[in-house]
Amino acid sequence: MSNGVEVVPLGLYTVGRDPMSFAQGVRAGEFIFLNGISAVHGNPPDASLFGEPRALLEADEVWHRTEELLSEGDSDIDLLLRCDQFFTGWHGVPFFHQVRRERCGVSPPSTSLLVNGLVRPCTLMMDAIAACHSDLQPQRVFPEELDIPATSGFAPVIKYGDWAFVAGFMAAHGSGDLGGIAPEAKVPEGHLWKGNRIELETNYLIKNKLLPALDATGMSLAQVRKATVALSDLADLPAFNQVWNRAFSGTPPATTIIPVSSPGFAIQDARIEINLVAHGGGECSRLLPEHRHRGALAPGYPVAVRIGDFLAFSAILAPQLPELPEARPHNFLRSDIDDQMAWILDALSAYCDAHGARLKDVVRIMHLHTDLRDFAPSCRAWQRRLPETALPIAALKVPRLPDPNAVVQVEVWVYAPQ
Image (tube, one colour):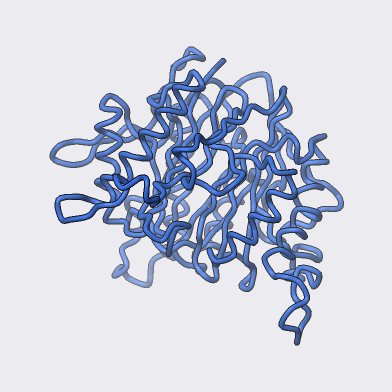
């Protein structure tokens, strides 16, 4: 078991004739990170229809495996602080919620997104963060002025010591969010312009969802350290970034952009959903990109932000700039995924070194691929860089990335106790 300093892999397994080692979870310090939990058995597509719904079986297997991993890491379901679900279709979401309510009662802050594909032949994948057993207990917070989805059954916010975890929110209104996207978050019906839809939605959900959630924990945007932003249309990203940078006075948190399916959210016409991790302990330490890494992430974004004993990185990709020809292959002796992964891993290593951290202490890796056939070679790139590390990695298929020549985007969390 961890001594509070080392990183301990959970759920170890190997794949391939030249085996690669993977970990379904990691314990580091007082936290457990679960990555890419999905069903291995489930119910095959050609199974008899007299059986239980496939989505229900998948959800049950995911939660059973989650309980096993948490137990292995000295935790349990009641200590979950956040869970994020990714589905390849909306039909399975109600079944997942059914199983989650049975297992958790009131579940931790949650985000459910529809995506283009998963690594395994399944319809569901889940990531989670949990606390290890200690005297400190998670506090579920239900702000009175905050509408939350009617059927999901999650706590909108959890406070855990200096940490706060805020669920994914859309610009929805009405009891149970059943009113759909709020009228003031839309261009008025019949008008071609009276504001910009993505800006209206973003401003609304910051003001009416994120700020009340943070305020209920005694925090504000100034304490936000990490955000995950899902967009159903990546063309909205430049306009979103204007609002995002302005909301944080030009110093946004580490931010990951996930392009989802269209539709990609519980509300069919929603364009954006955002979840947050905040931390109230001390000043915010932000690691800014060097000139040679410009273009790897959006303007204004930090490369990484310290959250307690962790470095949370913004998702980065290999920029296709004239001065960086090594990031783009020019003939059949080169490989997009190999070259781009080498560039990304060089950058991640450099920033870990600059912050006194070690990339081998990575506790979470999330890849976004435009083609999931690139996932195995991307894992080989990690293996070459970290040959003794069981990779705590998950991956999604996305329709496109912010740079049209990018084939992979990578987000990591690294354990870096001060």
